[in-house]
Length: 78
Length: 326
Image (cartoon, rainbow over all chains, first blue to last red; front, top):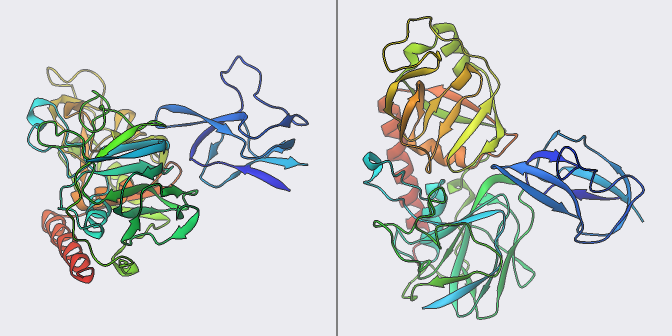
């Protein structure tokens, strides 16, 4: 199954802010270029954009966890 | 003069050189390339003079389109590089033509990439340096990190670089170990921390947190205890505080005892936190190539060792230069 990987290290967030809904949920269909999460590093919140489209099968890391470069964060099914 | 078209700026890409030395006493940090070794080799590979301005990219490389013929080299962190989609060597003298596009894929080790272009980045000097100091918006390209669609000026290209395809041997490239060792001179205010805690300081691995940038690296992993005392006038009640002093570049302060901060090229120059040690200048190259989530260890060394390390880096740079001679 295809995955979306983190391109930068930092802390992973699924919501634009703590009181907002997640960008995407399991079962959602996403399109290339769509923002699906944030990674906080160097005092900035950086948008994680999907390089490819598909249906979100699941998130592989938890909201607020640390990620490293190249780590799988989302699993996609066609 | 010509321009480079910045198609994508990357995450945090700035113009840097050897640094803006001589103004520390006024509160102006030197800025400059964080990994001086990789920066200097990049200039050698394109035939630039030692202090020419180059690009430093953190975590994500920029996408650059050239508008004339140039020599280019990419050094520093490990990340696949392409020109017009074709893989090219890193640490190597490359030739680009007008319209060629240099691009990076995802980084696999290290943290900072350097891109040198023959002629050098042609931004105006500010106080004798082209380095960017983003905190106050001075120097470099408009005092800031590059953005998509910037046009970056290049100086005229009179360079005689090594032959195209000349590549630095792996032995002379930096390694990116799992736990990076940072040789450290203990002091100036290590007397504020208990003996046991100073031992812990140099024994535990410290993890680089998300708060790690050109200003400083915040670390986590141990908990240091301070020696009890009645604070002297001007120090304040926090046990991590002392009467204000100048901070050496590379100095390590320990607010709270559990979050050491290593001050780096863009850091504040003075303040009132106890600095328990200073990473030696050569090993600032090493910390510059660690990223959030990586681990570092502080290894206490004496001044002779620090100076020997500096001579050794100079020798390595000269060996690199000799090996690339055309």
